[in-house]
Length: 150
Image (tube, one colour):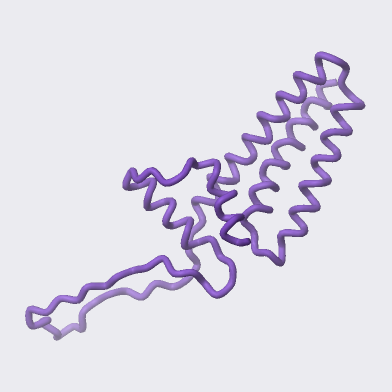
């Protein structure tokens, strides 16, 4: 019986992880995560129906929902910690260039890449979090990235 509870918890957690992956992954890879979401959901429902009786089923459903939310929040946190793999040039002045009193203003924009890549928005989310700007709730951000991909 304890094994059933463990399987429900693990399947639910993995379902939450796969939901975030499906919402944010490149469009060419999203079908695999949709398949995993369907398989985990089907297995979870089947397990809840076959292995639990009346009131245990209700408790198992609540545990399952909490584990899905935990997996979703965990993967959302990992998503926000993704680093930009692109090389950033070092901004330096030439060794013997005094500058002659001139300054340069460099404006960095959050441009969109040619193919879908949420890294620009992830950095925007992180900047907003660091500066205290309220933009959107943390757990809604993967869905926002999904809408952006569409």
